[in-house]
Image (cartoon, rainbow, N blue to C red; front, side):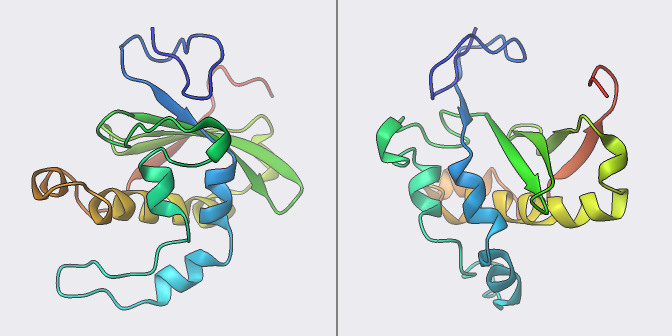
Amino acid sequence: MSKSILSGPPNPLRMVNRPCKSSAIFLLLYKSASYPDFKSDAPDANGLGRRLPGGAWNYHAGLIPSFCQSKKVWGVDVDDIYAPVNFKNQHWIAIWISIPKRHIVVWDSIVSHISPEELDEVMEPFVTMVPYLLVECALSDEQKVQYTLEPYTYARQTVGVPQ
């Protein structure tokens, strides 16, 4: 069973030897004012060259947060990222970003609190910037070609989530 890089009990969702990443600090990069900057930047001919949030490469490489460096690279050593997401300072949801599946699962204990349209808005930075980060920060051309800039898909998990 894998363990979260931030330590803790085994993760029952993954029964493999690859670690997962759990980080609330990472989400501050994606939910801050950086997404409008990213979105407004014109990409180069290859679709790259947009402005990523400060520290994004260091998260990708497992160099921050400094108090628990994993030195595990997303997509190479880490397949899954688990994180809390705050909605309008009123409600928390949890997300699981699966890098191999190019998919994000959203767990929401009060589904009626966020409309589908609002959830689309909350998820837009993640479905757009995570694949971009993987391409932009790839350590080699061989790694770069295994990723695409296509946005990830996402779904809100409704079965088995206490309401």
